[in-house]
Length: 148
Figure (cartoon, rainbow, N blue to C red):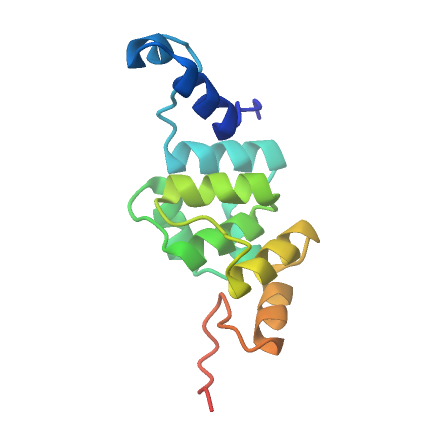
């Protein structure tokens, strides 16, 4: 996958530009990448099939298919589960979340901090849920258990 310029670097360029047009004239200043394009790119890059993502993410196959085809957009937890199912690192996960139109993982939020740590340590979706559950946080895959 082609390495994209960091958002912070683009912001620096934008703030240094004399006019918005000066910034927008740069060929790599903006992107119109869609979530479906990014998901397809990740599949190719990682040598995975959608069935692999379904198994690793824990998301219903029909839901995964609809997201990959652009028929539906994932909620935040499903986007995180997709990223884990795709074997994304933290940067790829944050990009997937942005393209899905949901908030990125934020280390100041307890639950997000646990998820970030798990992603950085290559944990599976079920291992992430175990870490969340053991710390009293909501799991990514709903458990159906009642809170006491």
